[in-house]
Every structure is written in C-alpha cells, then in structure tokens.
Image (cartoon, rainbow, N blue to C red):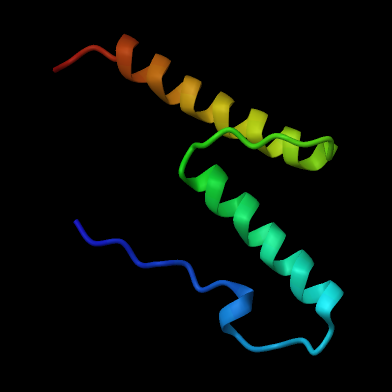
Length: 71
C-alpha cells in the first residue's frame, strides 16, 4: 500500500518571517504526531482537544468493528 505524503506548508516556500515559519513547523509537527496516533502533550486547549477527538474516533471505530455482525 502506498501513501501520499502530505505536502506541508514548509515545503511550499518561505514566509520570510522566522516567527511564522516556526509556528508552521510546530503545527506540522503536532499534526504529524496526531496522524501517527502519538500522544501530544502541552497546555494548548486546541491541541488537547484534537488529541481527544483522535482518540474518540479510534475508540468509536474499534467498538463499531467489534459489534458489527458478519454476514
């Protein structure tokens, strides 16, 4: 199975502003960690919410698979 690598903002070009570039790289790192289902810590409420949503979706998927009858 092949997967297409997500094209991140840092590959689209430079913004010319080190603060913005740093934020983009941190955002990419968080999104990549969430995609790999790695725990994402921190005090930012939005990041904690995204992590909780990923865990909830994974939990819903696992529970729906286990109760789905086979035909």
